[in-house]
Length: 380
Image (cartoon, rainbow, N blue to C red; front, side, top):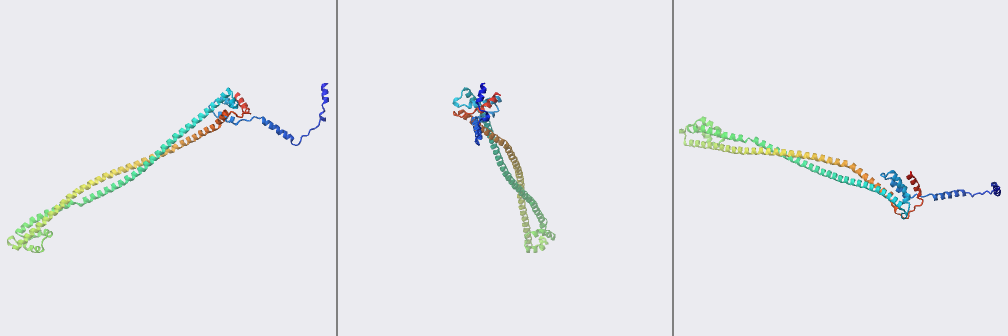
């Protein structure tokens, strides 16, 4: 009965007035509702994401520990520094320790690569010094080859001159000349003794004829030569005073002739003796020049060997330097990579953590947007 009374008091829907909304009012009302919904949606602090990425980058942490630390980020770091309780402070400490471990490992890796680069660069400097030293050694070796080659050329020229001089001395045959001169003296003395004595005593055309070769070379006056044929045919007892004078002059001319031959023979003997000494000296000079030439040849060969060794040493030093290059480049790349990783971590996740940790008035409203999925992940 009451329901019927109430329904009787309410107007039938068909009889209620129709309200017509202005154009655009429905769209405006919908936009206002969306804005109200957005204003209630929590905003995520970007520093939380930075810290989370830093923690997840630590591959040394067990997966469960990573999830726990990530879950602690909004609850511990989302609270103002001066308002954190003991549990939040401990969580902040654990997160800080984890990040410090990451930083320490990245720093150690960067330091190790920097040390390796320093060692390799030092080794490179040593190899470059070896190349420079090898180049200087090769230059000196080439100069040595040039000098020793010049010395060998000079020694060969001296040896050739010495041999030519010896051949000239040996071809002179001064000993033969001396022997010929001595023989001529013997012949002249025998001729005078065999034919002048009989001629001076008994005369005789045959003795005068035998003396003709000696008279041709002796210095005999023409008038005497014209008188001698008739004088020499006479016996000593038949000769006049003039004839005896002519015979005496003939004897003096023959004696002078023999004396001149003896003097020439003595000179020839002296020259032969001196020539013999000269030949011996020339032989000694040839021997010495030959020895000097052999020494110069050995020194030139040694200089050439030294140049070859210097060339090989330089090639080896250059190969070692070239082989060192890839390792150094790889070390430089590794150094750059570890340094960049440390810089990215330090300027990224670590800065985010320090900002959240140390900022007392941090805006943490709406940080539950990260807390809820993180907590759900940790519970899983």
